[in-house]
Amino acid sequence: MYESRWVVLTCIGISLVVALIYIKMMDWFAVPLAWITIVVIEVAFALIGYYSYAYAQDVMTNHNGEKTS
Image (tube, rainbow, N blue to C red; front, side, top):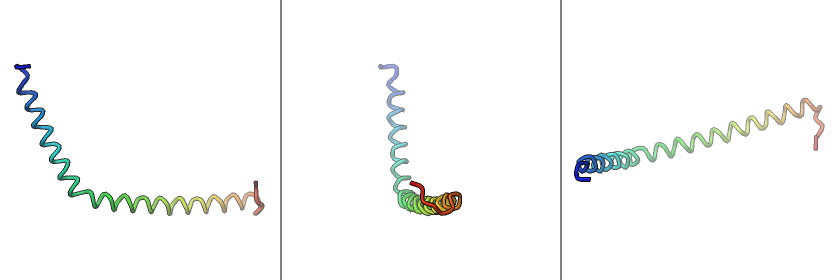
């Protein structure tokens, strides 16, 4: 334990620096990341709606407009 004290202290120091850098980066990028996430979700919903509509039209075309239950 005595021989490895500098390694342990160095690891504590490095982890403190990395944690502070992470916190600062989250401060800078939290709002843009939130907006990017909202835009991606909205685009995904629009694409899901379009592909659902296209699939329903394809099914209706293949079954001559008859409902299948």
